Structure formats: C-alpha cells, structure tokens
Image 1: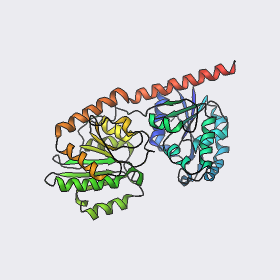
Image 2: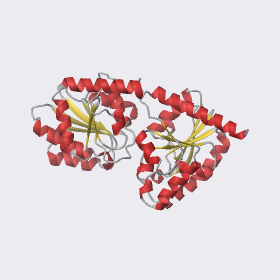
Image 3: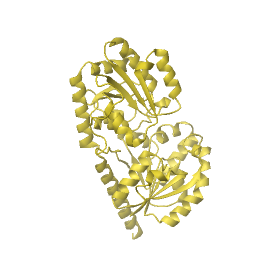
Image 4: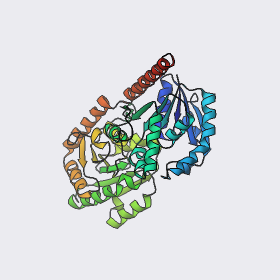
Amino acid sequence: MRILILSDSDSPHTIKWAKSLSQSNFTIGVFSIHEPNFDLYADFPEILIFSANLPKDLQFKNESAFSKLKYLKAFGPLKKTIKDFKPDIVHAHYITSYGFLGVLANFHPLVISVWGSDIYNFPKHSYLHQAMIKFNLFKADKILSTSEVMKIETSKYTSKNITVTPFGIDTSKFYPSKVQSIFNSSDLVIGTIKTLEKKYGIEYLIKAFKILKIKRESLPLKLLIVGKGSQENILKNLTIKLGIQDDTVFTGFINHENVPDYQNMLDIGVFPSIEDSESFGVAVLEASACGKPVVVSNVGGFPEVVEDGKTGFIVQKQNPEQLAEALILLVDNEKLRNQMGENGMNKVLSQYSWTESVNKMVSIYDSILKDSFKSLYN
C-alpha cells in the first residue's frame, strides 16, 4: 500500500509515523510545504520526500483565513507529487494547512488528522475560519483525533464519525534508566521538556518552584527546563527576578533522540500548559514511561492520560500555588514518587504502546482501502 503523508517533514511526529509505517511494509511518501531536512530520514532512504520548498515562516504562524490562500503555491507541486507517487491513500496532518491542500488536490481517499490548535484556536477567529474547518472536514473520507476530548471539540464542526488514535510511546526508547546526569545524585530535580512558548505555561512552573524553595528551603531542589522558544529570555529573566537562577538549568534545544536521557534526569515531570490545544500530552506520557510522577494542568487531553492521585496530580491551570502544593506532596514523599512513577509506567505499557498505535493506523488504512474498493464496484 502506498501512503502519501502531507505534513511538516521535520516534525518528530511526522518522522515517527513515516518510519514506523515504512517498517510495516508500506511505501511511504512525505510531502512538506517547506524545504525538508533530508538528514532526518537518512536511515530510511526508502521513504520518498517531496516538497513545495516554500519559506518556513509560512507554516502555522498567521491565523488569518485568507493567509491559507498562500498554500495555493504548494498546490502545483502537490498535484505533481500525487501524479508521480501514485498513492493509495493521502493522509493530511493538520486541518487548516495540509488538510486544506489535501482537499484542494481532490484526491480520495483523504484522511485528515486533527492536531490541536487547528481545531481549538483557528475556528475561534471568525465564521470564515469555521467555514474553512467545516469544509475541509466535510471533504475528508476519514477523520482522526489523538484524544477523546479533541474528538468532542472536532465534532462541533462535523457530523462525521471521528476515530481516536492515541499517539503511543516507543517504550524501547522511553523507559527507566540510569543516565549520566548534569545534577548531583542528592539533588531533587523538577522539570519540563517543552518548547518555550507562552501556551505551555512554564512561567507558572518557575513561580511554583520559587514557592517550593521557600517552603522546603532545606531540600536540594533543582529546576530543569529543556527546550528552546520565543519565551526563553523572558523565562530566564523571571528566574533571576525570583532569585532562583542558580538552581535552574536551561538546556536550550536538544535533539529528540536525547529526550529520554533528560526525562530520566527528572524526579518529577511538570507540564503546566494553559491552553486546551494541548490535545494529548506526548511529553507527559514519555515522562510516565520513564517512571516519573507527573504534575499537569487541567487542560486539553491531560486528564485523559494522567490519573489524578495515581500516576500524578492534576492542578488548576495558571495556579502556581496549587502547583507548588502538589510538588510539596511529591518532594516530601519518596515512596509516593516511586509508586506514582511505577503506576504511570504501567499505564503507558498497557494503554499507550507505540506498537499498538501503529497497528491501529494500519488497520484503519486497510479498512479505508477496502471501503474504497467496494464503492468502485457498487
């Protein structure tokens, strides 16, 4: 079976899907709006990469409905790609960019995967934005969502059935492991691994850590913030303002292959996002897979992947005081940390295996193709 994936070729999620589906004996093509980094696929030369070579700043930055017309520049290259690659199925990731292109290409069967901000943020801007969402979903032959909560949100714009396909965790890479840490063995390390953007609420983690330092001043507490983004300098300045800069480490950008090592440096993972567009919580489950207790905000899909009081704690968003109280419970009780970490790891193994996610996607593709063949002969 030949699957053409329409998605940002440099996204870790795209790379993971493309490589895993290729290993499942699919012939995979990836069409990207911007110029791809071919090195990311060097170990899978059989995956064919196509591109419209448009500027990277075209992607996802401008929320204007009319801005999506810029994607017309990618229409010609996509049509040529479809002609040359001859896919059995086109699978677009993200409704308003790649989904829009998939609809314009008028190839069927067309699968559209909802990612988060495309359904939580984009349609809120105007009726025109909503109309674009509804039209793209109407044209899709299959709609996929990574979480139940995002399925409910998507159903506001379509009457079609939506299939939930959780984004599983590769437990051959994410598992409890002793790693060479940048901290002392006696340190209690609290941290997060996210892009440093405002919607991820990292300022509230920093404020909660300050409260924690005051209330548990005798403990060797350290804060680890992994990632880069537009808020990096603002967040660094906040740690200076609060006087916790000497106990805080900002790593900057790290390669995705190094994420398991940093997850394993943590004693507690914290994910205080402030927007519902945090539709699933991959980083949360990666921390759980590494045996770490987690503290998350009550947004998006987080309550689906975290069992409050069992695998971690769920707190009110934008509430550093409540976040600090949850952290106090964990830093005070090593047994609780270990038990929650073990519970989280077992939850990932039983419910969020990457192998099962791939198998489910394969089954969906098989079903779509069978239905497509049936419609040809009916």
